[in-house]
Image (cartoon, rainbow, N blue to C red; front, side, top):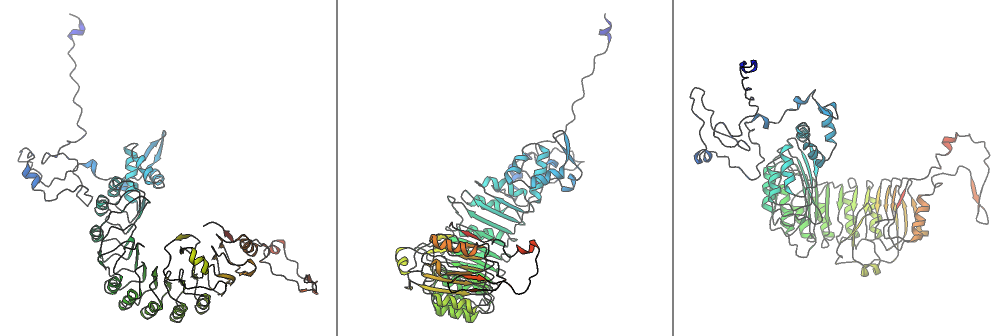
Length: 566
């Protein structure tokens, strides 16, 4: 017998210790994933086996799971499911490219990525996933363009500190997405939803009411594409700002928000729109007594609706915008004057008020009104505009676009609805148009006016503007304005919009606002000779020689920009 055979056999290696727990619950035997067990822990001395799963044990759980349940549920029993606190990352490092990098540095880099980049980083490894989870936990603002509700269902439950959410939807807004919003982000304060061109908002009035009631911390809500609501019945003590656009034919309009300070309701311009604005205005005084800013855009605005606003007794209004109401006349202005004490902004664009209504506005708010917008008001002439600039010393913004139009253009073209920054968009033609004189001269002198919009005022053929603080002038489509009858004395002018103007007028504008020697004042006496030329006389006293850097201060080129696009 060989010596090797006499040696004892080696014992088998000990079994590998168990490093992971069981996949089933130790109490009821159900799978741990997504399971919260409510059974008591078995006694140590009992020694009984854990109860087997049975229909009675599952039926005893009163918490019914929902398809998208993102509310505050107890943490799972397995330790690996618990989120790791932020202080556990202090001083930790992770290996990147063979080098140890602090985890805090990686988290700061991930915070500068977009949501898609953070999701991709989380798929690299467990260390990257931990860093990504930390980014989601501390995120306070999130801007997304979700193509489906699945992205929201995956992200929002991780964002425990989220307070502002901005969504530009490229897919339909449905009940699934609203469930994601309702069951997550318990500290959400601001929610904005805008729709892409082909996206559809299927939100109903009942779903909107449920969302507002469940999000008790929500203070700012802005939603676009609300054409399928059907009715409004909102009640919230925290909501302070509400913007709803594309509303159509609301059968009921009840907004009970005592702390609301700003309300914007934009209705569609369809002929089938039949919302009762009289009852809506009448209820605002009782349900929203602290309202300060009110904006309503509707073709159903009339004198009766504005009179109901007078009965609401909203004396604290500072900004009032009632646009596209062609049925509003000077009687509506009288109701506004009686109901509002100190307006700072008044927008009656698209109404049928006249110069008399402008006069009432000037007498009622001479010490508070700073922004007046009277675009698409065909019954206003240059007399009313000049009276407004003369009697409102605090005026900083004046918009009277398409209010001064020539008769020929009124018959051939529809109305435009423009903005103070020069952009123009189409809107339906107004039903009542007053015949304007073909040639009107407009003189505006004001010490505080900063923005003046005369877009589409084709009836103006002469314009003189002397406003030392003016920085923005809109002359888009002023087709009948003569270049030789234009005079701009605005040394601080920064932007001039001249889209659709004649080439000679554009040249005259550039000559006045872009002349590099226009800012220089002549320091030597001069006189005009018999032949019409000027001769500069020599000074009788020696002038002090200025340094070179000071000599060129008066000849610095103007920074004004002439915009020729729409």
